[in-house]
Image (cartoon, rainbow, N blue to C red; front, side, top):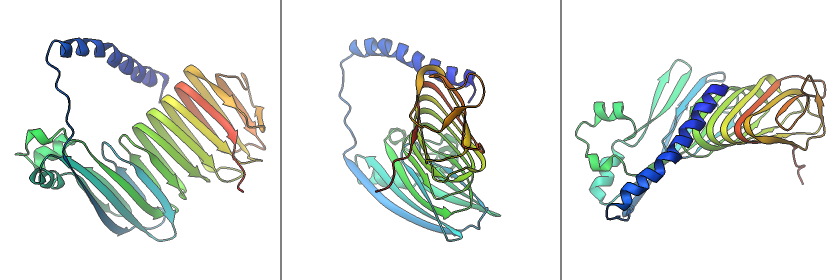
Amino acid sequence: MTKSTIKIILLLAFAGILVLPGRAAAQNQKTSTPVVPPALVRTTTHNETRRLGYGGTLTIVGAPEGSITIEGWSRSEVEVRAEIQLRADTEPDLDRLAAVNGFVLDEDLNHLRVLTTGTHDRAFMKAKAKNFPKKLLGLPWKIDYRIRVPMSIDLDINSGRGPVSLAGVEGNVRIASPQSDTRLEFTGGTLSTTLAVGKVTLKVLGRSWRGVGADIKVGAGDITLELPAGFSGDLDANILRAGEIENSYEGLEAREKPGITKQQVKARMGSGGGFLRLAVGDGHIYIKKQESKQ
């Protein structure tokens, strides 16, 4: 995310704040009606398994709301478990929502896609549910995904609002979300993570990064980098607007100017190696040593 992109995100957020007083004034001129949540909740679980070899690619397009948890395992297959929660006032309405809100699997040569379908997707609704009741389009719903994948795999994750967790995977990984609390455990590969708002915690498990490195950007929020003792690598960290970098890791040494400051870090750890690049628009970057296991 470039500086200009982050500034646009922040300006849009600020513009939204400016609009709120006007909306509030307009609402006060009318008789306020309390919002009543849908009376019924239905939760269902769906499981799917597909073969996918090591070195394959998995693409995930998440729901507007919900979590995504990914764990590497030793099998050459992907297991998808989706917990779908729907809300409506009647059972027939829940049945209508269940017919469109869900996910499909799209398979190609060594590429599997998990694609969320539902009322949030205008193109899908226009093609598959032309006469769908308009009163049901804005009702809240979510999908929580728990997915197990081969340990060596490429991942392309587009999540909605909700937590993302990833562990036990090494490959080319890209994660994008408008709002998330993202927790990552990595030993290497190529990692690219971009959040508009939220927090990212990257826990590096090895004494060095095997692969190209990691590039993490957050428009507004925090990044926490947890490193093991004796880690070797190169680090660039930047606060682009407001906030500061808090470093409690003893192994950082200035690599080039400006060295290590509250706004910018250009440092080397140990003998150097894979690059870790961190950038936050407004917020904090925390660099610290991992807590030892008891």
